[in-house]
Length: 329
Image (tube, rainbow, N blue to C red; front, side, top):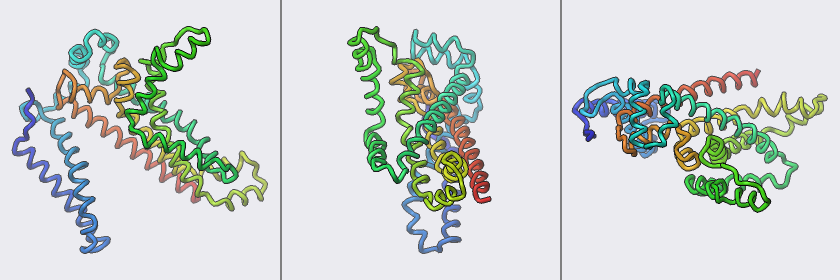
């Protein structure tokens, strides 16, 4: 049984982190807006402390400690140890773990697979979302606002329910296979594979690609486009020289909003993949909720994923700054 209590130095680490965070926020508010306005930032500061700073500190603490609360780097070594995770998979999944046991280093392979699936999801969402956003932003299209509503309505529904709805469509006795049998064809295995997981990811994250791009394109001044046309530019040149460069901030926002949750998702792979498409989020969930209970290893994997997410965000921000400078020039 794992000891979830913190030693004195753990509490001291948390306290030091909180004090530094509060001091930085107070210094920033005092320097920019004065002392009185700092009261308005108090609710947000408290929210950040409770639901952002504290969880990050706890994750870092458990990642560098063992079951007895002693400092260790074994959790990160287990991330590279294939035998350790293979035994966990047997304990968690039983005979179904054979599909993953054939891999070399399970955690690393899962990390690479998760990044690949996130890349494919982001690329497909961009290829589908940009034309849709461009169409919705066209002022000559009267149904543009209707399409925007159709993109927003599914987001009002619970994420889990949207994924379960796809199960009723893709399962062996689902609507698609029943329709194929009605036409005289044999049923197709649509569930429990990477294709189903990718389909669910694109469906759930596509609005996060479309809406940022749409919000940027719709604000482009029509006089800029008319000026380009008056100078002799055709439709392709207007798009390549005017619309696309000005829409890059929306593209970068959409890529960030799709890529980051795609790396860490686990509900979609669990429901549509049936546990056969193991993503990094599934490994983390296994450590906290599965039979192979090990919150310290789960925290280490979470910390690795947090670093990857921060690197991706830094690269996107850096790329975005370069693109903005290029557009201004």
